[in-house]
Length: 451
Image (tube, rainbow, N blue to C red; front, top):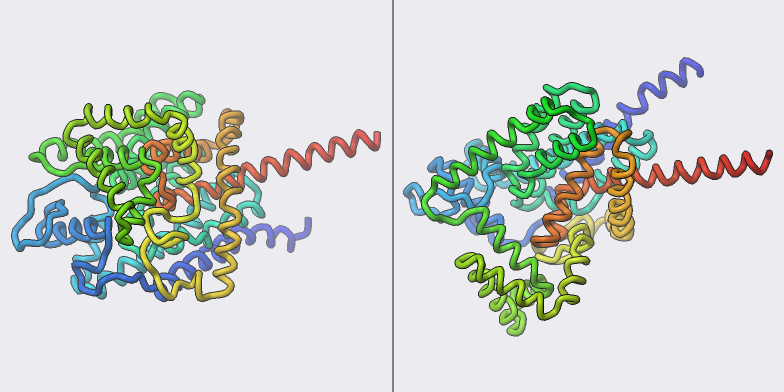
């Protein structure tokens, strides 16, 4: 190999990383600058649905240093634990820096776009040991341009923040374990703990990953205990805080709401129909709300009602739950406007720009392939568990776990947005394995023919 070839190889990886990072940041910043989410214009009503609660938490944190979603009254509100603290703290930090609404709103959207953009090179760095550079470049391009990952940054919702923390935490933890550096791996679990405190669904992630790596004999017990320090300490402290509060809305109550709503196959259709003032949809949604209220007030009676409803149509509900993993990783946002949009949006670059419109169509066509190959990657991870890097195994554990949890709760494509980079990396990894296996088979067959 010539000196020139060596230098080209040496610079290929950093050049690729820089180019894809620039593309990732550029697309996201372009989107949040040009797309206009249609919503009221005064500051306290400028956000919708879940965003209203996140904004209330941030406002109460910034003004009263109290974690509460109570409306503003001028006095310190009572604390609660209905939402998780991570994302409201992120919003409150910008609120302290920019008290003016317009500056705060712009700072939040731009910072979300930057964090989401940086998740792409972090994901590539994590997967560098999994697959060769051309496949890593393809994964990087898909992560950089995936429409859901771009559009979500224009909303006051936690997905951008959670996605960045999940990728950053997995990258740091996985790099430490791959290199045998336990202190670095423990540092990565601190970031994963921040992700868990921003989305409580992720609280069991590190313990599950530790148990898997122990079962595969990739770590010892001392390392396992070290990896559990931050999750147990900080998540435990947050739960103790919630237990010490007087009766108030809590995250467990939110989980019960999602459990019941996710058990109704017609919930999303009823929600959308009721928002358009369809009387039949409103009646269906009211029936769901009555069962949800019963489950919250009397959990045993509510559970009996759910199981009784399922017992009357067991095959119908079995088919419904079997379809929910695909719904979770699907394309169209169900609790929203559809396609990649949660709220009504005008001047979307994915609608007005011909190249981005074509890109969205290609990604939509690829989405079923990504889901199918993701499922195959879980099987490949199980078969090859003794010789694949711990970082890859942690990503596999994450995708399996969130698919299971949201299948039990609500299977909504918006909720899969933070985990799309991991889906893409696993899908490209197992596709590369399959292509390599086919190439080796053809090489052996060609050798036999010549013999």
